[in-house]
Length: 469
Image (tube, rainbow, N blue to C red; front, top):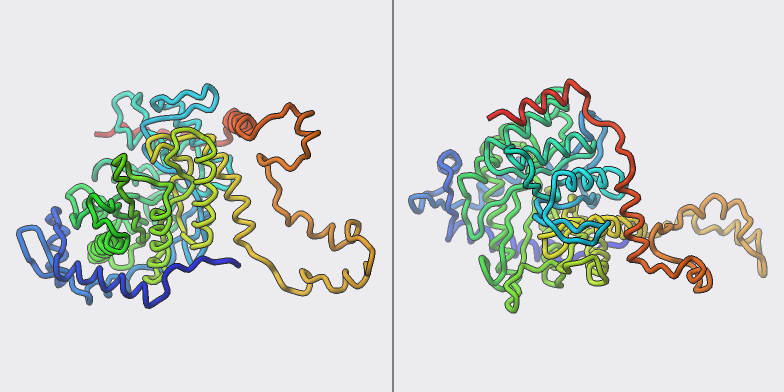
């Protein structure tokens, strides 16, 4: 199987030691009193009113406590859906875009509740997407918390695992209660987790009251969390990739220490989403070689620590679903598979994360299918080498009608969007370019009648939690 290895063990150790020195010498600001007290009681040294220095020994202890494998399950069941381990890669969309690129009209506009439902159902029918995120922020939720409303809609319209975001501790608790209602109770949800919280510390080197409260809550629940910093190289972090990454790595290691002090052994997913500031536009760019190098570093460092990993793919800085977006999707998906990043989000992002495009989701799904086949590599067993078949056919023969061909030809990947016809057939078919075929397929998938939903009793329970103050 083809792999991409950017950092060997000694290089990972260089990054690790740099982050340990940041934690020892510079320290971190912890604005949540409970987390501050946990750190001090755990052996961290106070160096200011809200600032502590963390030792290498405390980091090593936390790394030894956190599990190396996390399994996400389908809604309300014990059927594993997304095993986060080794080099197994799972893909899903991103969260919270204010804008929606309508595949029917081509219009870029603000998200609505109906748009969000349509996107969730699209995720549910695309087999290449393994989990769901909210994708958009609908303003028309009738006074409800938009984050709770997002989650309730995801819970209703997909059975796939959900990576959720939320505003604060109250939202986090309500969302966990909704997921528990669908799972048959909190113990069942803890045993077969179908949700992951995505939250962030604040770069540089700050743990806010709000984000840390959510981190501690997930530790107490014993449910998976991604607490992934997003250092902006040239803005909130050093302009060099090594410096920016070392800073972000220090932030995630300190997050892990807080998390494990609260509940040793609670599941934690590693990720450093190092971005860089485009000095011409002041935009945080996605489709850039430095950004992809940072994704590869994150995969390597996660394996170095023995933790499941968090990453990105299927996103672009382009404002529309065009050739630039297609190139970004293909490159990023292949990189995610070759680096073995476990939980890969942001499929469908355009405009550097401001717009969700269903067409980008469908196109990226096509790329995931193709690149998964590439990443499977080549088998060299006796059946694959086919020496007996070669001998039977002999010089000048053909293999089309052999049993061996009939048994294996379906192993070839078949596209649903990309064209393999000659120009005569293409002309006879209406000369349709890829963009037209993509739009047609996207709309057809979104027009499918949804299957299933929450049982009435569960739906009633979720509604009560949703509207609870």
